[in-house]
Amino acid sequence: MRFGATLAFLLVLAARAAQAERLVDNAEMCSYAPDDIAQYELGSELTNTGFHTIEYHCEWEPAMALSLGQDSTQSRAGYCEEPGFLEPSLFVLRTFTFEPDVAYLYQSGSDTPTEFRPCP
Image (cartoon, rainbow, N blue to C red; front, side, top):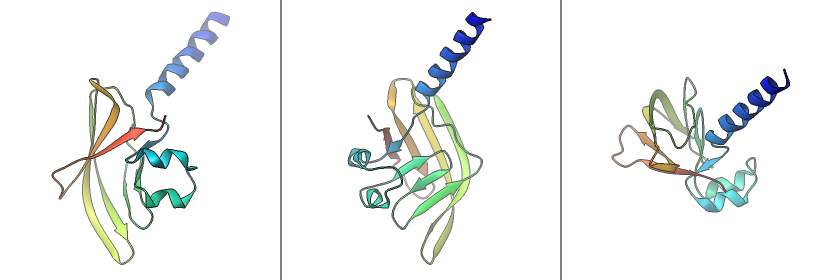
């Protein structure tokens, strides 16, 4: 019984290690608290349901897994919004085993992905 509980605990720790806690497109944001809106003037923070800046945000459903270090491609339909503006969009999130600290977010209408990295 005790072995089973220990094994379950270790599996949970391994799963948490694979999940990124906080992904940003500018490392300076890591020195700010996640709910401090001032950080968003520096860049974007990626969550499993979208990314956010100070007056611009994009959302999608269902949530995407933010697992780094795995070969994964996920796509979702969603929208982007800023004051007075709303546009539908398609998002693709790609991660790779050979780049374990990068998540690439592609958005329809753009040829270049945004690179998100975990805070140390």
